[in-house]
Length: 522
Image (cartoon, rainbow, N blue to C red):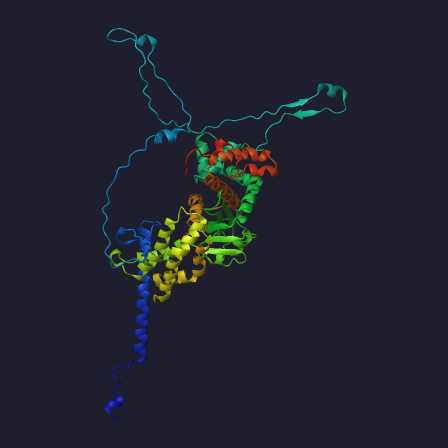
């Protein structure tokens, strides 16, 4: 046998070597992906959390209507930031204090001291120097006795077989058989759901004021008031929501400890539905559900015909029939921001992630120019300017050969998967480019959950959903939450079902004192 027959060719690779090289290549790919994940996690943990998009060197992308492509090769100008001291607006303090009552204290010289120290002549008042300060009076508790007088006829008592007994008219209590008043319940509810103060902290605060009210008692009052009265208003709210043409939706997790057939560790959900920017009277509706399945929005939205704006969650996309799902461009933008965040700032320009983000930011920049347009004008402007940008974005996305498991690959896959739902925003001028309005509305619940952590029972979760719905809708309609709740608890026990429309948060017949006189954002 010759050497040529026994010696393998130099370029030939043994099966073991091929397997080792394939393993090395696979591990290198996994290493790259893991490094991306680590950089992203570090960016999320240590970087500022903001909805503002990432730009090179902190500069905003400049938008030109005629040339919306971002020139990555052009060096960005460095802008010098100059601190400018803002001048106080004249009359602002007076405007801020105009809705508050004024208690005046006059400091005057006694008559016998109004004598000139030089000539001993009488002094006259030439001016009044006024200094203003805010006085705060802590809450105080008072026992109110409702004495309803009862009358009977003495003559009938002596001569007739029956004696008529007549009671004077008096308002019904919000909770029969309890010490709870409308003002106390409004205080408890607003503290818990508006200011996120758990009931055990309220119990301690009441104890400091000399009131013995256990958290169990407070909880019973809140749940009873919700079940006895608020379901009527909630039903009115749902009817108006379903009758709308544009709705926004979102959901977030909730832990309920005691629920039949479920472990305490299992996650339940709080769903949110709200009206869009075109609504004359904004409505925000929270609904507790033990699951996150598509059956939840399908059941709630039964009878709804129109656009549903949401994130890319599959439960919404499973909705069929007359519901047209519109997905959020802000969620798509976040995917590209994550792909860009893992890169050093000096290496972001010219990357594919940077280009994809530039396209989406151009859409948002255009949207800001459409802000003051009517719905029809916005629709025409989108067809002329935004749709070509979006179409070019998708043409670019299909041409990018990013690794499927990389952050850029995931961003592009998300964009392509939701293409029909993202492009639907351009079909109607009433629709918004993002679902941020719904996310802002669900944030109060998320903030409250961080404080009271969980609900004990489904009844408590339903009560929380009802009160959050009433409070957030009241805020959106310019009402003072405490005054409105107090008014509501005074009226609800004393009106019929047919009069519910007069006390809903969007009612035109609400008294002026429950309305906020100035801009108010708790």
